[in-house]
Length: 255
Ligand code: ZN
Ligand code: FE
Image (cartoon, rainbow, N blue to C red; front, side, top):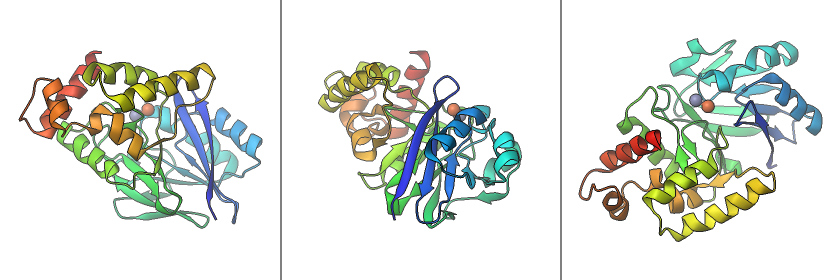
C-alpha cells in the first residue's frame, strides 16, 4: 500500500507535510513548524495524527509539537543527537534505525551539517525522502553547526539514494536557489529547464517540491561540487570536492 502525502505551507516559507498509511490510518507530520496549518491539513484530509517525525531542533521545525501532542497524543520521534533540544520527545533514533508509520517504514539517515544531529527520513518502499534543511531543491541548508566536510558527506548520502526518490525539503527556497545556481553554472541546460518550470509553478501558486534525486544531481550545484566543470567555475580546478563545496556555500551565504 503506497504512502499518501499532503504538502502545505507554514510560517513564511516553511513546508509541513503529512505522510499517511491508508491501510492502517496512521499519519505522520514531518516536522511541526506551527500547529494551526497542521490542524488545517488534518481537517482537509480527514487524517488522524499519530506521529511527528522531527528532522532537527530548529524552532521553525519544532514550535508546533507541544500543541499537537497535547491535542492528539501523537508519538514524537527525534534525532538522538539533539533530542534534548526538542520538546516532548518519546523516541530517539539514529543512523540505521527504522521508524514505522502504521505499516510504512522509514530508514533514518544521519545528515549532519546544518545542525549536528540532523536526520533524514527515507521511506525506501515508497521512494520518498524527507530531508529537512539538509538538501533543498537546487540548494542546501546553511552549515550552521557542522563543518563543510560534514555537510558534503551528508549530501553525498542523499545523492546516493535511488534517482527516482521524491525529496521533500523544509522550505520553499527554489527560485532564489536557482538564481544563485545560475551564477555557478549559467550554461547548465537542466538548470535552465528547472528555472522555467519553477517560475511557472510559483506563478500558478504551486509548490516546487517534491524534487527528485535525479533532478537535483543534474541541476543543484551543491551536489555537483565534485565535477571538474563546477570546480573550474569557482576558480578551484584540481581542488577537493569539499573545498569546492565550501566555496559554493560561502558564495551563497553572501548572495
Ligand atoms: Zn533549520
Ligand atoms: Fe528551517
